[in-house]
Image: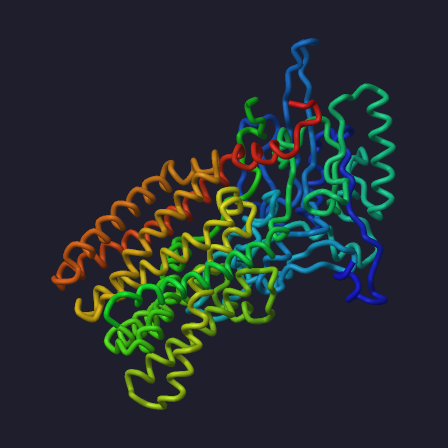
Length: 280
Length: 296
C-alpha cells in the first residue's frame, strides 16, 4: 500500500469499524458520544416524522447517523424495525481524498481518511465526489477570527466528517462511538480481525435463517477497494440509504484525462478549421 | 423494473455545494481558453484585428474566472492553498494550475499588447495562453465528470466535447460582437461550427445516457437547455444570414449566442444537482450492474 509506505516506521496496522446492525437498538449513544468528543456543533432540532430518526443523514455536523427503517412483513403481520448506525466508510480508494485539490484530506498512518481543518479551503469538491454522501460543508457561523476581512465569509465554510477519532487512536483509545455503544453493534479494531469476526457472525445469522443478512463493504475487491468501516445489514443497502454498488469515481480518471486531451486537441483543430476556406 | 427502494426518498449522495459562480466560471473559463487559441491562430494568419480583440476578450475572461472561483470557496482567504500541491488525481488541482498559467499568460499578453512593449515576451505569453487554452476550455467537464453525480460521471465521454464546442462557439460569438464583419469571417465560422458541434455532442450524450438523460430535460435544467438551444440557434442563424453584411446583426447574433452558451453551462450544472437529489438515479444504474441478493 503506497500511502502507508510513506509513513515508514510510523505506519500502523489498519483499523476500522465493523457495524453489526443486527444488534443495534437505536439508542443513538454513538451519535451523542461522537458529538461530545469531537465538539461537533448542534445544527438545529427538527421532527422529521421518519420513525425515530431526526438526524436524517450524515453531514458536516453529524458524523454518526442512526437510521430507523420500519417494515411490515405481510406473512406474519408484524412490524420489523431495522436500525443501523452509519458512518464514514474510510474507503481503501477514497474519492474525497483523490479529488481534494489542497491536500487537506489525507490518509493517516492508520489508513483512515481525515480532513485537516486548517488546510481545507472549502472548495466543496469532495462533497459530490463521495459515493456515500458522507462529507458536507458546514454552514454554521464561523467561530475562529476572520483572517482577511475582505475575503472572509460569515459561515464556517469548510467540510467536516468522521476522523475515526484520530486523536483517540493516537492516545491508544478506541473511537468514542464504539466506546459508547452498549450492544457492541459498533466494533472497533484491526480491520483483518473485524473481517474474520464479521464472517463468523454472518455464518451464524444465516444458520439461524436470517435470510436478508449480508456484509456490506467487507470485500476488498469492490468498487472502492473495501471499506475501512463496513457493515452487516439485514436488507438491501439502498433500504438504509446506502449505494448498492459504490465505485470510486477516480477509477475512471485515466480514461477521462485521455478524453479531455482529445477534446482539448479538438478545440485547437476547430479554431484552425475556422480559418480554412475563408479569407485570413 | 421493480420500484427503487430508498431511505424515506432521501438522496444517497450529496448534492454539490457549488454556487452560481461555478456555472458562470464554466462559461468564462471556456471563453478565455478558446479566445486564447483563436487569438494566436488569427495572429499567425495575419488577421490583426481579430487577434487583438480575441486577446482582450480572453484576458478579460481570464480576470473574471479566478475571481468567480475564489468567491465560491468556503474559505476564500485560503485560495492560495490550491497551489500547495499538484495532484493529477484531482481535476480541480490540475485545473487551478492550468487557469493560473493561462490567466497569467493572457493577461500579461493583453497588457503588453495594449502598451506595445516587450514584443518577444508578448509573443511568448500569447503562445502559452494558446497552449493552455485548449485544456482550460475542457477540463471543467472532466472536473464534474470526476464525481459520483450520475449525470456527470456517466457523461464523461461526451461532456469534454460539449464543453469544448461551447467554448469555441463562445469565443467566436464574442469576437463577432467586437470585430468588424469584414475581419470576423473565421470568428463567424467558429461560432456557427461550435453551435453545430455542440448540438451533435449533446445529442450523442443524451442518447448514451438513457434514463440518466432525464435530468437534462426536466425542471430547471430542462428550461436552461431549451433556452440554450433557442438562443444558440437564433444567434447562429443571425450570423449565417446577416452576420457578413450587418454589424448590428453580428452584435445581436453574437450576444444571443453567448447567452445560449451560458445557459448551456447552467443546464449541465442544474442537471447534476437534480440527479444527485433523486436516489433513483444513483440506485438504478448500480442495481443494473449489481443484482440484489434476492435476485430482484
